[in-house]
Each structure stands twice: as structure tokens, then as C-alpha cells.
Length: 109
Image (cartoon, rainbow, N blue to C red; front, side, top):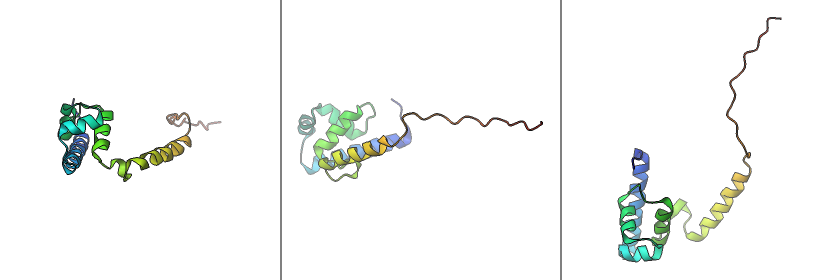
């Protein structure tokens, strides 16, 4: 899978955060994998920043080892953040139309 430079950088950063958090807990990749419900191979792929890993698995592993996702401080705050964004999204219109090009007005009457 080919990804852009920014995406690759984010994957590497998140992978490093996972590796550091796992190391802080002194967990093996296998121990982190068991807690996250994935394989040890998936944990090491995440730590390498491999883009083929499903985003849900990346988040499961990150949360399992204690990475602070979205700057919430802890897992409990994720629910409040999700509710806050749901409320904000409910204010958006149901459908958004692309702007139509301005029509030329003829004033030769």
C-alpha cells in the first residue's frame, strides 16, 4: 500500500508511541497482543508503522498499551469526547450541495 508522506510520518509516530508505552509496561509484543486481541505480528507491524494494519487494530493496540489517543488523558475521556463531537456533528446540515456556478445576468432590455 502506498501512502503519502504525512500519513507515513503519523504511522511511524504512533508506532513509536506504542513501542514506548509497551516498553514502559515491560510487556512483550505477545503480552500486548493478548490484551488487545490481536497477534504479536500485528503489534510489531504497528510499531514499524506498516500501513496495511486496519485502523481499528491500531487503536486497540494503542489503547491496550496506554497511548493517549486524541489527547484525552485516559480511556474514560474518550466517551465524553465522542459525545461532544456527536453533538457538534448534529448541528451540521443533513446534505451539503456543491456551490453552483453563478449564472450570467443579461441586462440588455
